Length: 364
Image (tube, rainbow, N blue to C red):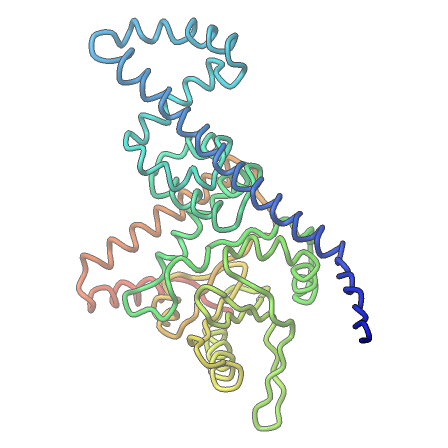
């Protein structure tokens, strides 16, 4: 009887590179989770420390006495636990707890933001501004430096100014654009041309998209459009991933003129017919120019056509002057909103007509 020969089993070859990549992903994922958990616990600890000092030591008649013992308390804590509990930080913890007495507001933010982020946010007086910058930092994964930069450059206020230009019948969604846009980082010199501005934006595209805001992705430069055999070109085309719509951007080196509206309307209609994909919303447009007459823009009802107009500044003024300018524009925007609420439609139109006629408008 013949013996059956056994064949040796094949040795399975292990893909070492794939194994390394897989194990690395596990490690990085767990490290990231551990870091997020540590940040959450540290922030909640700081809030709890601040809340305890505010509610127990500084309560009622002991407020003055409590203020006196903050310094020696901080000294002892710093000696025992390190510089995180120095006087300045201890006062921040107290401010943090006073600002947000309900810890449940803090928990979802603390899962993504570090204590350094909260320190940058604490000086903000408005809760709405606080939440805007906090959510923006989470959405765009901004570090503490970029968060401070956004706060210094008044991103929230500039978004609110842009929102103030929109009416109830607007085709432009809220919270998409800003006004003005700060393009000082592009390094443009005096007497630049439109092509120079466009080129500078493309070279500094990452910075420009950061200035535009969350959700924008670049699609094309000098987007070609053909109608009846005639070529037309749009300066810049972006796509907003969250809104799921194309965003046309046109650059102008002169103050806004009514003819710009017709031009952008043509671009939007062309994009809507030939570029819009299934499941996308209608395109919207942004015209960037050095200046605009707000009365004229209201009269033209730009937002109903899905168009926003915003100024751009290529030179950043000194801090005090910049803050003064933004505050003045904010006040004007708020007055405009209040005026719309209280006046009948016919009266609003009369005021717009008066403002429109009283300004020089030689650009036409």
